[in-house]
Length: 576
Ligand code: SF4
Image 1 (cartoon, rainbow, N blue to C red):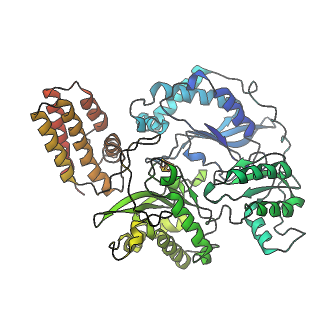
Image 2: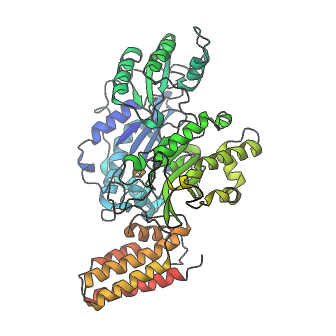
Image 3: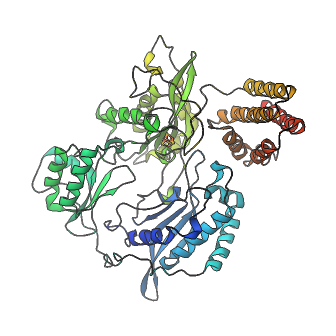
């Protein structure tokens, strides 16, 4: 899975076009024996611009274009980051080298894939990403193993795989100034569209143009019409941007007015692209089997709010990114958004309430990338009020030109949590029924679907707050199974008891694992590896998986039940 910056070949800030290198690596790796049997997915991206348009540091391998002077010649290469990934345990990729000569990218990629193939996890699915391999080996040992592997793999010629396009932009052309006002019009709508959608180009006389797709959606009829627009206005080319919009890379400046009129005719001429109103969402519960609540419903409501009562904040918050995922898997990349939400559920008055976990302060800019901080869980109906409250505070208290993420860091989690605390409460059903309905699904009773399996994870989250009593009930049930000589059931039930106890502590950290396996793994991750158990319960997740896998008989059932009891006791007494 290889991507490149959607502005490649057109950006005035790129030292060279990265597209041919991405294409060459793609050709080299397709059907390559090194990656036919990996434990799980592997993502590579190439960025050329000075700014980040490809979320470089959340990829397994991120190549960022760089040059250096060598013997009077300009040499092309890449700054390389390794081991990033999102999901419920997000990691930022770490810097492997400041400069990897372009001719060595195949050697590096092949060596990493060989390591991942050899040492990467295969049984526990949620651990089968390179970020966990790096975590388990430790960064220094991983780099040492990689360097050794690179020597073993040896040189692989890049020139054999480079497509013809290489060199088409070999003469660097300086940036050309962007004229915000088109000579032919003073129409405010056109000016606003130009301001938001049209960007500078590497080549004189051209512009890059974004076409806004609200929430990333487009109908088939409009897609056909847009293909025609690309043929007429952009040399037959269009690209999909990481912000779920379309980019027309080769538009002549004098055709902008005509292009805007054409886009308006097919209802794709809206301004606001890449601004705070351009919310990113995953499919959420509307079409994804794993979705808990409607990400698109909330995204649409937030976007509308910036056209309505939040319009006063549009300029202040112009560059902020709001992203919403329908579950903790994070397909909308909410953990690297300035304001991120992921869907969950709350129980109130015996009913289920759609909710979202708010995280603040994430970004992917390579030099200052950071994972957002989790602030808390709120009913879905209060999410727009959260945004309004945060923006009001930002407006009132920011220092000169202080960016939102710096502001969030300065104000601190404690104060933000206190400020937002009133929005955690849920009114009774009689008081306000709208809290019990999801955005986009008004007049429907909200419910979390149970037991659904899918690509990204297992069953959906539990509806109720985990309690240690629940773990105790599983233990009693397991003991009853042993009494009735149903040993296999007893072992599975004891395993669930341990997971239920882990969930209690995880819930206090706002982590809501999907499955029992994941609960034990997250416990190991957050409590054991972090040192909070002082060495107790090392490798707990693999230990319980091992116990569960024993041949079922009375002895093995009692063994897992005893360990589960011990673990439940441990969690009961764990200082909160
Ligand atoms: S798995 Fe979760 S985050 Fe990914 S698309 Fe589905 S609901 Fe969204």
